[in-house]
Image 1: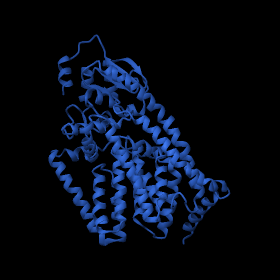
Image 2: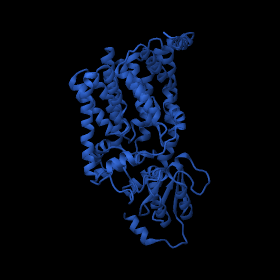
Image 3: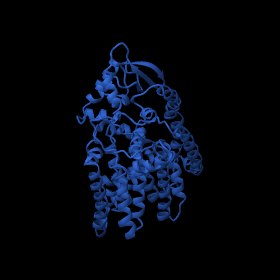
Image 4: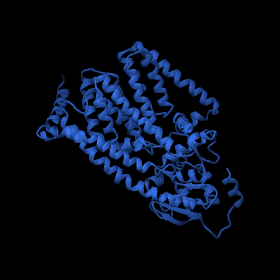
Length: 508
């Protein structure tokens, strides 16, 4: 053992011993852990009540995902020319969208089917925890408890009822790992790569698990490397060629080339601490365990999965718009890793750390539900009823920072503001399309989350409105109402409108 390595090892031991003088943390751990199921159920039910609205979401990404699924449900093509209205593209592969569309044909336009798919995916992750606990530890109690604790992590709780692709993608990846660990040719070499492919066609950045397994096989089991990679490559290539053919090449354009937006690595620490910080103690524990195993060359697939997911998650957080969904896989993999290596909740040598981590989540989760996110959610839910009443009184497309309003009042989103503003900044789309529409005043209503006549803007508004768009809005629209947190604008009066253009553009 080198001097440097011995020094690091001693540092880790010193960290563990630093909590030893506080035996009450260890003694209290069983009682603290027993609070987890009760608090998890309480926070989930409270969050469900906030998310219960079938026709509204305060989240800006949800309506854009639902809009694409609704187009599919109506038999429309979602891969289309971005130079013509409506300005909307699917930035994700179509698997989740197709699943939601199938349910929307039965229910009509509603957030509930999409949210139920995300919830089902979250429960599947929980089931995977129990399956892995039985496989590794000959029990299911640890996996059951870890699943309850998972619902106290705000980033997971936020996304488990969200109309978004992330939860389904992570569930497919976790189950790809479960099948691979069966150590059986049918499961490991057929189902595992196919589930990894399904995860990729749910979200194209879902690559941590296949990279981890391929690396593990390259180092530890080369006999299985070629079959695994071959099946996965075939599973990726065949749907890709089919999608390219039926979309005229637009699938790759939308899901890859137009999905790349600006990147700022300086934002990574802040975003990581905000969304992954609530389980930072567990992440540090997992990193310490991984370091020791790397030193001893004790490597399993789950070691590679945790390591790769950590690197990919950190790298992805610099993308503009990075939010809680970016850390969901790392959170789930951290729990999986601790189930395998430490046997949560009865973690050996880390009892005090577990008590601290669980206490942090027991305190923070209800604060997140009722205050950090809950205050905004309740205000938005209440305001939405009044906004919908206003929108009933007009015709024509609605330009709205919150996409639920045009989607449920007009049946579609006229423009995905976040993405097309980003494309404009990247030089991939001419924003004259939308600034001309604003100047022509084709929108009977414009709805923002900030006052356009003011000098102050928020980060969210800057991501969705370019300075040129805000200038055009100031020149052509005036505020008529403020239904907090939304500001409603209508066209200014006293100037002749370009009615011919307005009618043509409004009708698409």
